[in-house]
Length: 367
Ligand SMILES: NC(=O)c1ccc[n+]([C@@H]2O[C@H](COP(=O)([O-])OP(=O)(O)OC[C@H]3O[C@@H](n4cnc5c(N)ncnc54)[C@H](O)[C@@H]3O)[C@@H](O)[C@H]2O)c1
Ligand SMILES: [Zn+2]
Ligand SMILES: [Zn+2]
Image 1 (cartoon, rainbow, N blue to C red):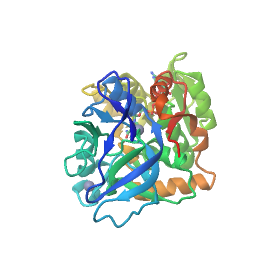
Image 2: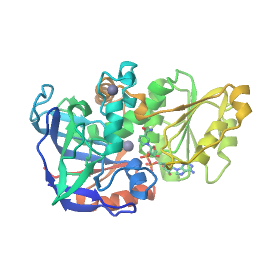
Image 3: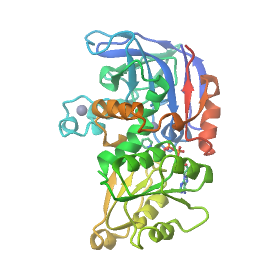
């Protein structure tokens, strides 16, 4: 089967013919229909985010079950599935605490690049190729732990389901699950790419009165307006902190979401929230990067700083909810996919993402 392999930091991804082993016990082989192009993969390609190499990247995707390993009872060949980049075991400390995005099983898979039994299903000749976050959606076929899949209705288009797997679950979840934004609140979203646009539509779903979009590119602010932003701020042209205060009675917003991954932008987003406000960090900063906040302000202004991993989602609850909202016309997925590429043009897809040309793009597989 064909897949895009990253051999070294800096890339490019190479389209290779790989062998794929049948699913082991508790695993599922999926024929990928579409894989989303997320900035987290680009961070890995650029070396800002660690992943064991060589690897089949792609952590957003959907497809059809091809075959199942021993002991798999929830899935059968032909089922349509959405892939999760954080499998959750259901019984570790974090799963039991209602925070499956922090699951120890899923974290182990992510950082090892191996499936649960400590091995990979991908090889090229004698070379072992790793999995990425237990998904690896940039290949025609992949194998996942059954805990990393959600079954979906066959009527849901698989390309739309794919982007729910990361961008939508992360962006909407940061607003609804992590911050629990309440109706009438004001929010500012810094960075209006695939994930940030979903924080914007999460703000609309939550009933926020002001949804302030900040980006450095006018085309992104145009997408933000289409997704429901009420105020648009181009941070390359004006002082964004002052501009946010101007539209929030001089105080700052109730909530800010940093959805880029730049420490300086995180520190600025902290200054965009009012006293008592909450900053939610969604962007992935380069490994080892640090950020500083005024120490006395954290206390004097009672500000909260929170991380949001995978939108603090409960995947098997949230994925069906989001897809139902889409079917009811209340969640924009069609508008999110600005381009489709065949696997052979995956490096161009990442270049376009890096240049800021797309809202989200997907790799569409034939068949
Ligand atoms: N927390 C999580 O679980 C999680 C999940 C998925 C992605 N992410 C991270 O979220 C971030 C966004 O991902 P994406 O796929 O939406 O990326 P993207 O490239 O589509 O979007 C990033 C946006 O930030 C804008 N931007 C860049 N520099 C800016 C600046 N100085 N000020 C304002 N805007 C600026 C860009 O123009 C772009 O619109 C990445 O860091 C990604 O790794 C985190
Ligand atoms: Zn992602
Ligand atoms: Zn767990």
